[in-house]
Image 1 (cartoon, rainbow, N blue to C red):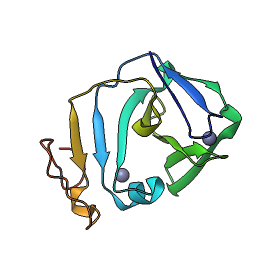
Image 2: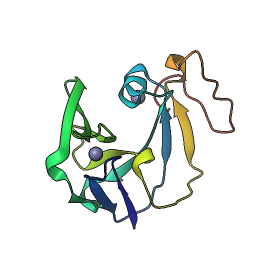
Image 3: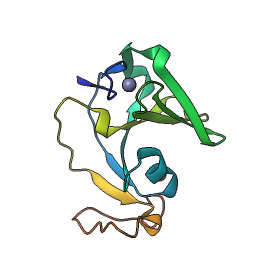
Length: 132
Ligand SMILES: [Zn+2]
Ligand SMILES: [Zn+2]
């Protein structure tokens, strides 16, 4: 069981599953949305993600019409994103996870858009845009 929540603690969730993939996204939208060099994201099954507190705080913003970026209306923590045509999946923001886990299946995407001030020369695969 994976547990997590937002910075103010208003939103709490449980995920009845494992983190099986870590996608480090360097695209300009993710950089803006996180206020950071990249977003660390994992796909999770919507049916196994349960909000145990703060569902009323979940607010969404759409930078693109078909993709909701969901964050805490109180503290601003990004929680997940979801695409309208893929409701069975959510893309969880891994910085909100409290339960320690390890996952070596990590990779960088949208490296062509990465911040000029950040190198990502670690051992994980890099993709210019989406994973191929
Ligand atoms: Zn919050
Ligand atoms: Zn991105």
